[in-house]
Length: 394
Image (cartoon, rainbow, N blue to C red):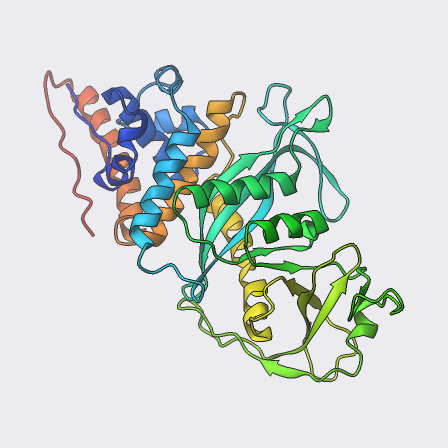
């Protein structure tokens, strides 16, 4: 008889969520298998069942996961993050970022599948997932807190991205998260979304579109201008973002201009900045607007640039943690392929010693040792033998 159990490091991550749906030991084993699958970048349940000596069969894994509910899992995840960071979260060091990411899939039965457009007007087939993240501006990372998979019925979107944005924010605020500024890209440059954020008393930083028409006062006698003409001859000053803990080089100096404007279609005034690479550049490379009229231009620029951390989050989830790569023929599978990478990347950031690179390599090595020892048992025809776990201490 061979006794093989899940590695301690993976068990620590799974233990945080065991009160959610681990009703039997087999459920617990299945989640450990799926965590390893994402951590090692495996492509399917069958590859996990082959490579992990302690794994159940593919059929057993599938039959034990039908009670998984993403809402309970994500609420537990958000509660853990809030308890860990409740004494650190403030406007100075944290903000929220919301964006959508594509998960290219094919097949008729894939949950949430549809044809979606990208910013470059290309169309892809798959899932469109909206994610809300908590951005640590000083340490330079984003933690995923909430998500929705966009749905289509008969080719029509059930809820727009702007509606999902408001739902994402309301859900985390109801759970005790503080109201912080939210950073959004130009896709979210909507007058109605701005108004909804105003009503929620949430300050925003939006990378606005270049084709907006603006003027400096409400009077209808004042003509509408382009951004370029509005900022013409305004004073520029230099700003330089502080480097994060993981950056080796200091950030480059940029030049910004500040102003207050009314955007066509919006009644309330906004603060805006134009950002330039050089002092002598004739045209800006980005425009940011906010409903918080008191913040400085430098702080607004920092908010706009920190939004990029959610893009880095998506890249790490997809390239290193197999985000969305599992078969998504049902809602449970689709949610698992999102929730488990979220749990792993939060553990990697908030508990770095637990899933340190050295530990991860030890876990991978241990699985191969287990398989090798098991083969040795069968080849040598031993009747009974117990194999203990390989030590995974760093």
